[in-house]
Image (cartoon, one colour):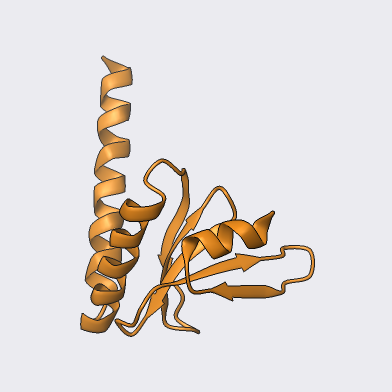
Length: 105
C-alpha cells in the first residue's frame, strides 16, 4: 500500500508542475507550445523527451529530446530545430527535423 501512495504523490506532483508550467505561459507562448507539440507528434513521436520548458531569456518554448535535437518555437512562430554542441556551446538552427537529424550525424 505504501508503494501505491508514493506513486500517487509523484503523479500529483507531476500534475501540479504541469499546471504551473502551463499557467506561466502567455498567449503566444501557448501557441508556441502547441506548435512544438504538433511537430513532436508529427516527426519524433517515438523519441524520448529529456525536458519540456520555457526559456525566459530567448522566449523559446521547447521540447528537448534525448537524441540531441530540441524542437523550439518563440512568440507563436514556426518551429525551429536546434542542435547544440555541449562541449563548445555552439548552436545550429535547422528548418526541418530531417535536416537536424542529418546535421547530428
